[in-house]
Length: 197
Image (cartoon, rainbow, N blue to C red; front, side):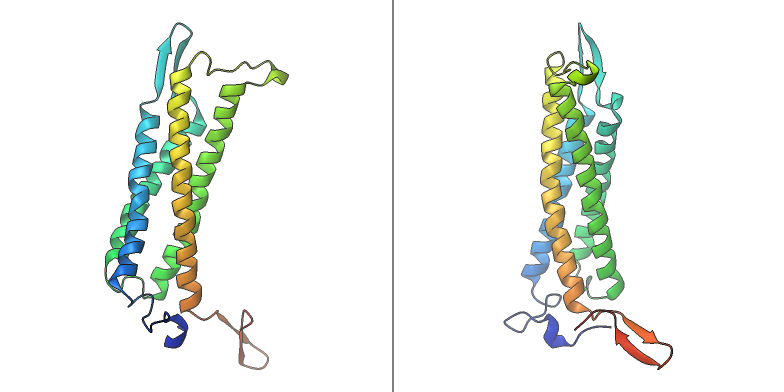
């Protein structure tokens, strides 16, 4: 159920959705920015391999880095699609679309955060090793591989920052535009708001 118009108007009487092209353009640009970053992180990791006298290593040898590549690819695709949809006038005015953006923004935030966190752990072990299990550091032998992987992980965390902001925006749009769902009391046939008003 939509709230009354007064609840989603800005201070100068313009609603978030009808508001201005400026707000829609800003959101579209915010959704579009991760595309380039995700593709940069993905390409850096895809090209990350090194051969030397100690052997050869590639991103595909480590499942954490493969996950990072897949997560960045999915995020790039979603960012491009969501930017195209949000650029259309009136695209975010229906409840299903607002809910879809909200849910997907949350999911993608956690997917890319998990990819960055797991890859960071692998990089930490590659740089520091683990003395308890006599695992020596790998980055002293494969320095350029580690540096490229580090660059990809840093870019991924920048993407996380964009997705956190997008999640906040989609949460705001959802929870300020629509009333909480009502629960019908079967004993009294009275609708009760699920959340306190």
